[in-house]
Picture (cartoon, rainbow, N blue to C red):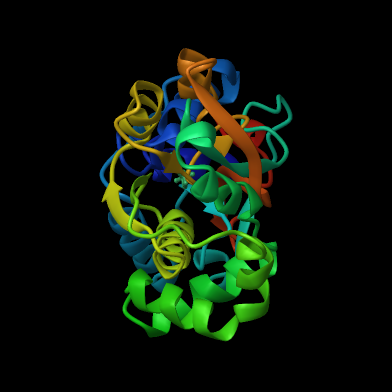
Length: 269
Ligand code: PBE
């Protein structure tokens, strides 16, 4: 029957992403919790490799199950659907939050205020991610163009705040598209406001550690509550959470819409 052929054809394998991604851990929990996925495995490599395999599978109308998240351009480029997750392990909706090191408010109040005000509408982010495809994923360029074209929004973040006069500021970001965009916009806006900003790309575990130890000042990268929840809990109380910079994100397992399954429970062990 169709469904068991799909599981067999896939060799009980999910096409995953980076070993250090929060989602990799969440997918492991899903595999452990669903009887339908007993014996399944995640093949890990990178988001880029996953996207290549997804494109190849769709080109050949072959089955594939990928670790997926949105906002991401793959949902605009391909017809994909998230598999239902009746146990809610991936959670319903994620938000991306801004965290800063303890003491930032007192030591760099200007940066704190601007970072606290950072907020994206989902639509801003989605169009930036589409733009990035046309700009070779050069997020510094995408961010610069966005800042130039959205001076009104930028003004709401910097309104009434004194220029900084050369204070250094360390930002850390993960390397996924959404985060590279927001970190680069933050960098440009803070630089325009007189900060000397360094932006370093790190894995999620290092991002939390850097903020908790005070090695870095701020990050706009944590996905909550599921994706990075374990890291967040590990360091809770050792950083300050300034609240969501984007709402309406999501993670899960996704398949091309031509596949005849709708739920994680449609898989076979
Ligand atoms: N992601 C995209 C990342 C965070 C942003 C969902 C692939 C992860 O750590 O899983």
